[in-house]
Image 1 (cartoon, rainbow, N blue to C red):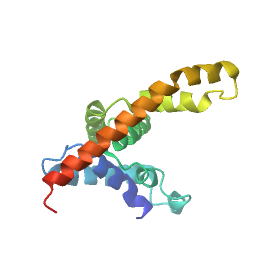
Image 2: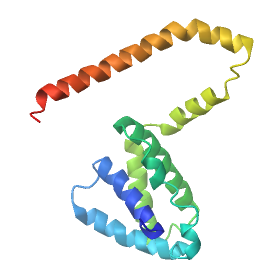
Image 3: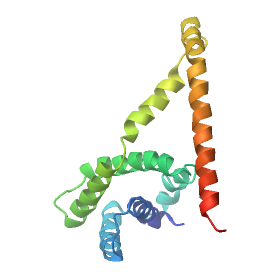
Image 4: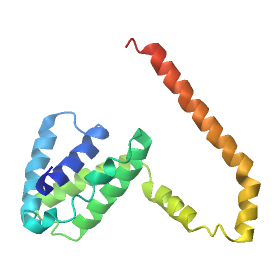
Length: 165
């Protein structure tokens, strides 16, 4: 995939994934708006390809629906942040921003979940007090893990019974 099509691809995934396209007309209109945005940002310059894609590669690692909603929520927020610093009087910027804002409102708050993950990564697991707390919570964590796995197996089993594959 070329770097020029990455933004359209990501936006298409986001919008299709959350059912925002009742017709391909909206996507076609946004495609034109994105082409205009690419021109604004000179995204056809050769350095755009340096280092590979910034969003589409990360999307491949998030496979479950709820996982994808978290990462897509973050990506949408980043696009909105980027567009907030552009000329909002341009129609194509305004339309893309409005569509992304509508999508963001339909997504879970991925920022809170991301913060939780970052807080977990920062826990000082070599600290004795942290270790004590962790040991006190171990049974509850394991119980939640077992319940989650059991629930996933039940869903899979129900799907297999319904599926006439």
